[in-house]
Image (tube, rainbow, N blue to C red):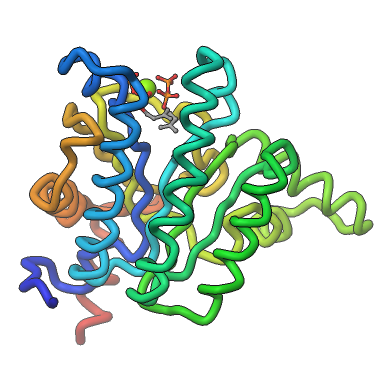
Length: 247
Ligand code: IPE
Ligand code: IPE
Ligand code: MG
């Protein structure tokens, strides 16, 4: 289903990243256990994937579990691990049908062998899909990503340059995010895409992640469409370059 987009293609971000925050508060407001908020969060993600496909976004990268989230109470961590396993078995076939290519950037070594196997299977099943690339960052940390890339370059005897690091991060298969949305009202990066978000436009919304819908996405896309990305240049340089590219 195509949605009449109000953004011209150059104003639509190619790559959207989301810090899906606020599940716990969503549950608390309803006197539910925190894991109920995480479950509702999976539904919000399913709808957001569809909305991104409908609008022509090519890459969606979401933060599902950070390297610091191990510090949460044991029952919440195990609830999140179970939810990952459940979501994989339920959602992967649907995502494959939609033509979504899946990746799970993050440190997988510490995950259960059952989950590790499911992640590899989901990635190989969907490798030929091209409707949308979906990166589900699980046990991901921006510092981990930079450090693992540097370690690999050293092990390969390569020089550590910006280009080499970019090619070796866990998100090397996609370009840097154009837009990063954080739900839940906090205005921080919480160790998400530290390397990749050098020039990403940030949109913060108080909307709790389980409440995030197509309208909330459109609001963030509209905010992005109104931004001027200067990459260090002056506004005048940017407008003359975009004027000449249309000539
Ligand atoms: C984000 O929601 C999900 C994860 C970090 C796994 P939170 O669980 O952080 O929700 P709040 O911030 O406590 O409301
Ligand atoms: C960031 O949210 C991690 C994810 C959404 C997976 P947190 O809730 O963990 O972030 P902090 O602790 O408030 O910075
Ligand atoms: Mg939070």
